[in-house]
Length: 391
Image 1 (cartoon, helix red, strand yellow):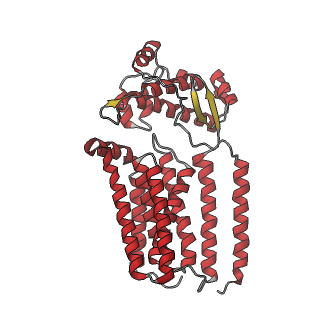
Image 2 (cartoon, rainbow, N blue to C red):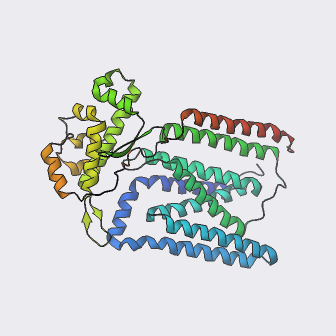
Image 3 (cartoon, rainbow, N blue to C red):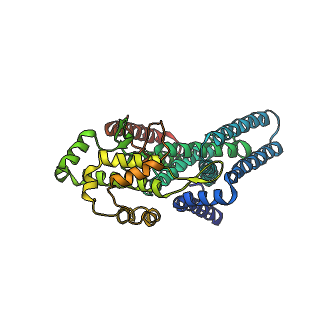
């Protein structure tokens, strides 16, 4: 764009991609890391997030005080206070410590992306480019999570990643940057931005279609609430023996959902959860609820694998749980369910399964296509109009 890449630019982008790679590569280790840190240092270990945030805020304010004067200093300090307050609000509001760490991770990623783009294009264009890149990184993050056992990929979390990146970029701009300006913007740079936004729109649509998914909410007093890509009519057809005539894609969805519910059932059956006051417990109530879901919605799957052990199936997605489950069968006997029920702490809350809880139930594929095409057409129109910008 403005100039050839200097070695410093190359190292910066290598660092950015390495940082994204670290975020992605640690996703499967997060639950184990969280459990290990809590067991060793207690739940207060993640309070260090607040200390880190406080240090960042202090450094940002000091930088603004040193470099700015007059009315500009007042405006930027006010903006820094507002952004810091928003960060503090969400850090306190998020229920899990690891989510607070994630919020700061993408705040830093947004800053790095902004610096990377700012070195090559005017800051007016660097802002939306950094926003879009942070969002795309979030799409990749959630796509990987969707492929991991006990994790889900949510478009909502991608928006949270974008929001965190925007807050981080805001702090960077108001403390260190110049006021966004249109001066020096060239046609090729505008078209590069529009092409990047076009690609982001396409990636978002593909993520929603292939990862997030569309589906249904099924709710009953005995099984609680479950989410599925299949309608109740499809479940009835499969469980009545009609799965053989289903398209292979739908049978694959059915089997995958059943395996996920089987994993959740045996995960609750074998894993210890930390009590806030100390000690551990097993969530046998959720364990029995997931088994009830299997018996109600996935009877065909249970009958097909009735003579198998859970461990053999779970090795496909979670070797740790498979090792713990030992010789427990896929289909539970009445005596085993009764024994587990005696140890369960009952709850009056409606059970809600975590399996495929990300499916979109108030939005259709046609809606997705309509809005994706509409956005792309608008971007295409802006591409044509960008011809008026000096080359």
